[in-house]
Image 1 (cartoon, rainbow, N blue to C red):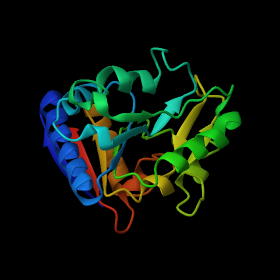
Image 2: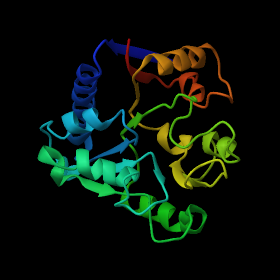
Image 3: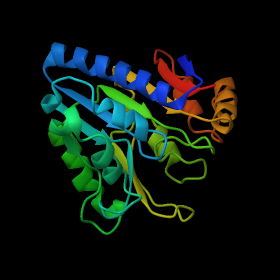
Image 4: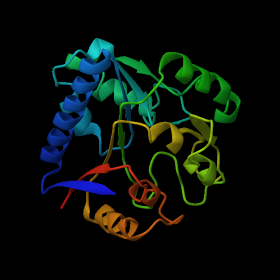
Length: 230
């Protein structure tokens, strides 16, 4: 199930999302004196990151991680880590601790154990997740034709992250699993544009392997907070 916050302006939407995420992080800090935020890459979240970086909270107690990552140098223009460091880990948020998914292994499949270990030793729980969505209906690195899709969506898997190395991808990736993310107190889905609205409308109808994002919308007991433009 899901609830929707809709705006006719992408920047206004980004500000609303930043305020909501900030409020949720503050609640986590009040309750347990720490918080973990998982964010996505792409072009859509840039203004959201800029707005969130200016929200006043105890960022030194916040860990920021990625929902997924391309297996590229962390200073590469297409690196999600670079995106987050450039647009989120600054201003008020410069004190946040960033934990990336990329390591020195040649491939995600070779670096999976180190990545899993880093996650398990440095965090125990994700509090807030902000997902994006592609025009093909993917979210995170959950792609329709991926050989890892079933494993990534498996609610019973023990894995927190998995390598995604399908040949159709420009670069191999590492992605968090649904099992790891679904326990978050708050899960957001943020996207903009008419084309993505059409994809979302289809995903709302039923769970479909053709639209991986549909799997998170039809989970019993889990509400997805959708932030989208008209």
